[in-house]
Image (cartoon, rainbow, N blue to C red; front, side, top):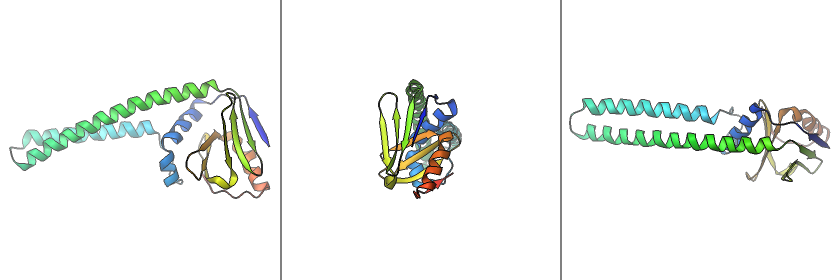
Length: 182
């Protein structure tokens, strides 16, 4: 069976594609866990780092000499380094997000092909990703996309959720047993 589409990815779909790509290792580890926005998590971690920095700064200011002051200075330095690393990761993540969105926006035609042996996606630039049904670890249905994860952890197909129903029906009709999570 073949599903051909000329639809562009929506903003919500692009956000999920990026989040799934970034969080793929965590999804493999616990597929039942809901997907969180990596940028919101990064900002939250930076805020916690700033709070820890301020608390350590206040402790340093009100602590006289001694081992507690040394611990405060070390903790404040570590907090500062963690804030800096968090900001660098956030900035590089935003750039990677813009690059991946630009790449996804170039594709205006794709073909989803599935049969008794495998499922595959072919993009208009000739890029093809195929996964045999026996190689699928699980399928995770998100709000805007469906991700099909290979058991070797090297590949994942991510397609818009609107194409999930025909694939699920095909799997049911052909008795293809794959774990899936919502």
